[in-house]
Amino acid sequence: MHLVHPSLSKLGKSKKKVSKTQEKAKADHEAWLRKNNIHVDQLSKTKRTVNKLPDLSERTPVKLSNGFAPGGLKSGIMENLHNETPEVRAAILEKARAIAPAYSKGPAQYLGTSKDAWRHAGKKNSE
Image (tube, rainbow, N blue to C red; front, side, top):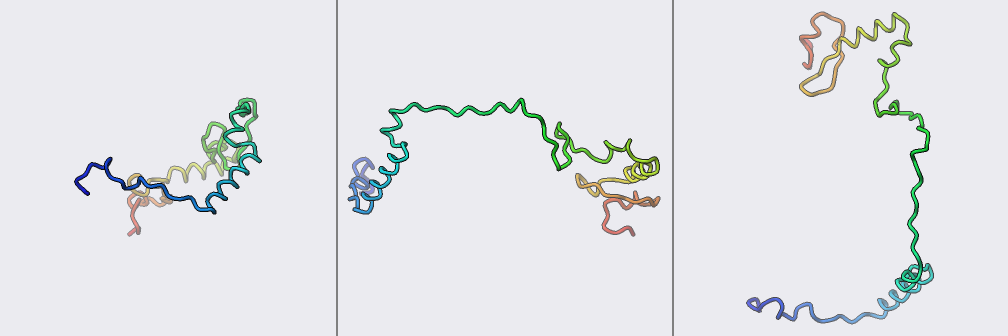
């Protein structure tokens, strides 16, 4: 039979008998569809309406609690540096200068204020 063309094979051509429970389930489903006015016969008779989406351009932007500005940029301490006292501003800028990447394409790490901190950037121990 394996040398015969697939169209000549009778495999898969027989129809299975539908059981009474399957017939009852189909009838119950048809009744439910008719009750909710979504049966195929009922849908062809009624006009379908497309839901109109609300116009979102008129909404005012809401301030987010995650610190992102309206343009999508993260607002940080450097944006509000002008509001700080001169001592705090100097300390922030000094710490900002002592930051370097921990390793290639890696996160930034605080190096500290010691003079040889730059030599040990990205190493596990500072020895």
